[in-house]
Image (cartoon, rainbow, N blue to C red; front, side):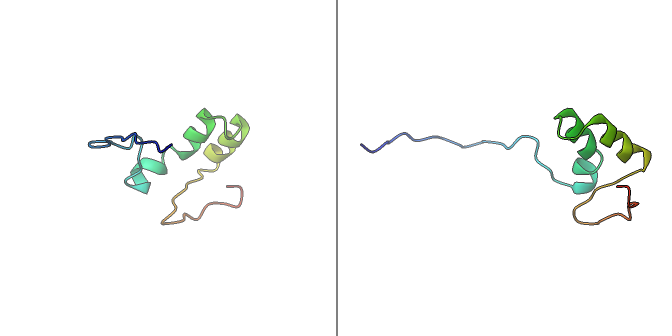
Length: 66
């Protein structure tokens, strides 16, 4: 049998989308990883101590520790 169910996605929005890497992704990336338990607290502390930064479009000159 063929499923004839249709869905109306008019006005459907994507939540938590990134529109600007500098403002949306870079400042919160490591904090987000920590909160979702992707990285341990010790690694987050190392990022913070070394001022590590992340930007896909414009790589920073992070130290080797980053």
